Every structure is written in C-alpha cells, then in structure tokens.
Amino acid sequence: MQYFVVMIDYGRRGREAVVDPEITRREVVSRVASGEYQNISFIHEIVEGSAEDVTEAILTEAALPQVPPEDVDIQAIRLDHARDLRKHEQT
Image (cartoon, rainbow, N blue to C red; front, side):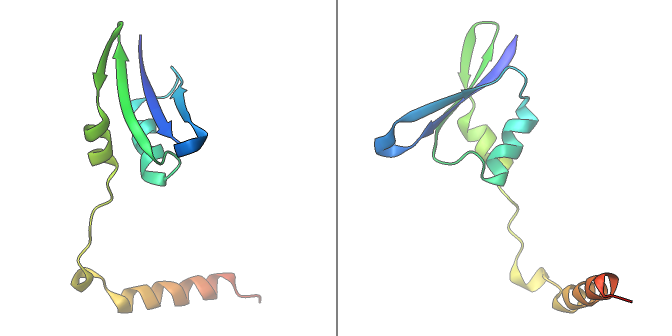
C-alpha cells in the first residue's frame, strides 16, 4: 500500500496531517500547485511501512514555470479577450 502524508502547519492553531490512501502523487502535486495545501511542513510518501520525505520533489513538481515578460504576447491576449466578449454578448 502506498499513500502520502501532508503535514500542514497552522502556526499557533496547531498542525494537521492530511492522510488519504486514495490520493495519488499527481493529486498531491495538483493540490500544492492550486494552493489548496499551504504552509506545508513536510510531505512523506509511505510505501509498505517505510516513509520517505518527498517534500522538495513535490514542491519542485508543483512550481509553476516562470514565463519571461518579453515572451508574453499582449496582442494575442487582447484578441482572445475580444473573442470571449463576442462569444458572450447577447444577440
């Protein structure tokens, strides 16, 4: 059996361990990336009774790629926005 333990630190209010055998690694990464899991103390992967600290690996996987400002196409963004407005306008 394999599962993940995500320890969340709430400061003076205490800590909470999120343990759900149904959650996969991909789901843990997704929840970290979305911000559902914040203030993470550690993430342990439990496999057949042995624990491994995978905090750094999960946080690295969940990091959003940094897009340099010069790579952002402002004109394309405006055209997409105009198209969305036309799509939702009343006829």
